[in-house]
Image 1 (cartoon, rainbow, N blue to C red):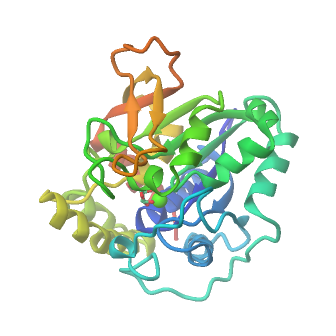
Image 2 (image 1 turned 90 degrees about the vertical axis):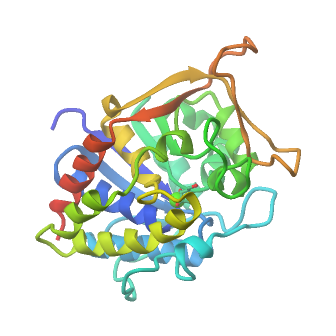
Length: 317
Ligand code: RIB
Ligand code: CA
């Protein structure tokens, strides 16, 4: 297929990460992306588990030779804060796990990203971070020339019009490594941000869950089981019919941007005050006069989003 999107996902699986990664494998099978690799980062759980879980998810997609690299085991400056209360001690509660067959690639994820971007043509690779931005920030710190090869960074993280989910002020990915988020935002790379403002409009309602559950394969019911476990925490917390499905929004926006709406804004992240650590300051009305550095997404066609998720999961084993 002409100019399919070359995509690398940086991830901390994580139950919603699993949905995003399975969706990406399905999009590749549909011929809609050239899915290049997974780079794991510490976040929801520690790096050993996020790297292992990434490999398990590739096994589920029958992609047992897919490139998976392990990256940062802690944020740039802050101590690692994890989210076992949401994702379980394994990071993938709600499903039976196995010892992965998909091997872990040797070499650090940051080295892989730098080497791959330096060998790539200008504006040719989409990076899709769906965890803390530690790996991406290290790439940009160590090799700022790599920005040349980045077509766009389409990331899940941050919040502004929606309250925080790890503190009242901040979203987990940006709270976990706020310094990394700020480095990415100041890099000059083209950035699209999928914050809680939009992911909280992508609710895993019962009908949407049932579509996955009724798929005539293994991964549909498997993902429904994972999301059922995942959303219990959010249903209890937000009192909604279902939980928000965060990470697939980033993968979907990278491939189907027409399903999303937002505004080019200047975005900065709090890295000083403990009370507001990781909070986003989004210049929605242009009051600072600062040049916009990100497309801040606030709207999604949720029905079409879940249709694309289901169509992508349906082509998997
Ligand atoms: O705040 C939601 C984000 O934090 C998602 O990426 C979820 O997987 C966790 O990493
Ligand atoms: Ca994640």
